[in-house]
Amino acid sequence: MSHSVTVTDLHYTYPDGRQALRGVTFSVGEKERLAVLGPNGAGKTTLALHLNGLLRADQGTVRIGDLEVGDDELVGIRRRVGLVFQDPDDQLFMPTVEEDVAFGPANLGLENDALASQVDRALAVVEATHLRTRVPHHLSGGEKRRISLATVLAMEPGVLVFDEPASGLDPAGRRELINTLSGLPITQIVVTHDLPLALELCPRSVIMDQGRVVADGPTRELLGNRELLARHRLEMP
Amino acid sequence: MGAGHAHALYVHEHSVVHRLAPESKLVAAVLFIVGVAITPREALWAFGLYAAVLGVVLAVARVPLRFFLVRLLAILPFIAFAFLIPFIASGERVEVLWFDVSREGVWGAWNILAKGTLGATTSIILAATTEVPKLVQGLGVLRVPAVLVSIAAFMIRYLELIAEELGRMRMAMASRGYDPRWLGETKPIAAAAGAMFVRSYERGERVHSAMLARGYTGVMPVLGRSPAEWGDWLVAMTIPLVGLAIAVTALVVT
Image 1 (tube, helix red, strand yellow):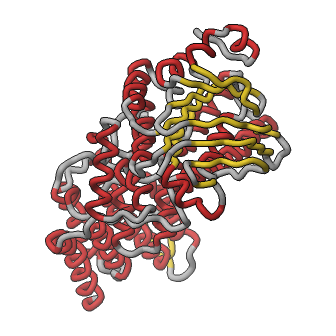
Image 2 (cartoon, each protein chain N blue to C red):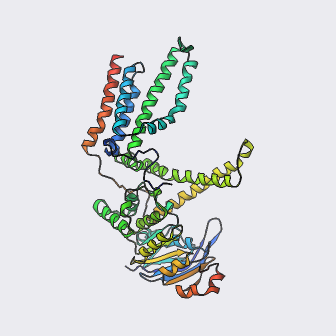
């Protein structure tokens, strides 16, 4: 089972008439890490929501390996593609951390010991085993972010889509997250406007603006092109 | 927002009462309250005994007296209403502390005061010794319909978040010089309430997306903890059994 991602000519218009995606095309190879960069309102989050079928394209396709995202394959797609939301308070909704981490695998049919060991494993990856019995909304920002990641890793996805992973994190929290992500041997799509993070984490990037991919290449090259960045409201610090 | 894992109603302790399984405490509390509710109001001694039983549980659970009294203030509005009854009820009049009041009304007020205070005390003990997530789990173990348990869990989860948002909004209004004194100046509050509603609604949609993304198909998965040991039930049930014994005795002798 391959975990490459192929997006072809994706179009999406919100019900209020806002055209968020106007023909997005790119692909990510198995176990590759790709950054999706772009200014606010470029359509990055909308794209992320298409990758596991939460939004359905008006036109164009998303393929995960040999599976096309569509009504028939939703369960299989959501098992393969883990999506971490921008706001951990949207992601963490169960009464305790361990129940939240168990939510996904339980939906996949895991029970009892198998479920418990899956929760253990996911919490260990993000080094949060000690937070197990805590109430999610009483955690710090960095802890919430790590648990959000664990809730998705517990489903053992082959593709991880992370929307603004470092927003609201302090430097140490950011460092820990980068270390965790760079150690994960799965396909990753990191949606962000944090350019240094992209440079550290992803060898390759695409830049989106106004619902289109406007550049695709090695992150170092793209971020070295000041003129390109300025044209799309981006800037290296 | 503290880093602690406790809720405002919870007292962090390690007493016997804290350790009991939540479902056993839930059932015990409900049964005890039923016992109190069916006790005839004239059996004054019975209410004294109930208070003594709860006093012992409070002490064993190491709930600080001050904490308990502050929590008990929540029933003040009901008590205030009860004090009106002797003056507005009809029937035979008696004189109590220079006031000419209705005998039936005095008994009615006493009934509300005694049973209300005992019921509130029971729930304060339950909340002080059981963390909210455990209470929710307890409801699940007791086979309360899953939809109701989910609604309760979500409400608890997001109520605090919404309260925080409201607090931030109020600060943002105050920092821009908003200080309402007259009814005519309350329009921004109404606007803020509207904005809160829309925000909560949108958050609801995002949370639903997050659930779908993790394979939610419309049924909450059962994440059951193993149910209470019989020992827990045995210990927890002594309290309502004593309570029901008092109630039955009171019913018989009155």
